[in-house]
Length: 227
Image (cartoon, rainbow, N blue to C red; front, side, top):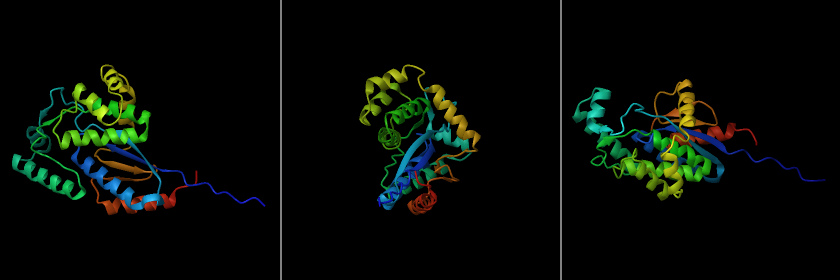
């Protein structure tokens, strides 16, 4: 008799809908990755970063961060500072450094999303590396993540080809694909980020604790069908 072979479960697909200039997206990703580390080999996952622009109409020169926050959310400069401190403290708990003194401007992120789309075509590891590099560049180092020069350098820092990145940025390559993905997730009712979809099931929103993501991963893996 030949032994029976059972198919290994397919990797759990995670669609992480987010923006490069979203602090709670940085916190959510940090929590999610720590949850993935906790479940270890019990749950195989593949993360796909999907585009969402918090400020699609942001002009090329960007806008002062405090001016933007007070105008968009109707809060005072003091409240913006308090919110920033709460974000900084939450990030520190997870090992992510928010330097609010450097985040002085809010930038247009469409070109960053185009590079992330290309990075996914290169491989999931490359896309993850670029996503993390972009988040740290903006929130920890205060870099202009709309600048083509900066983006090409960050792509190289993430292990991608800087020359190819520059070619993409100098063209409209992947613009239609990014807009199509943005429209798709908007049509699904996503209005806030991060929105994390596990195996195409109901999503988790916000910068949730590590334990929340861990429970969701284990539950989704238990419901997953074999490959």
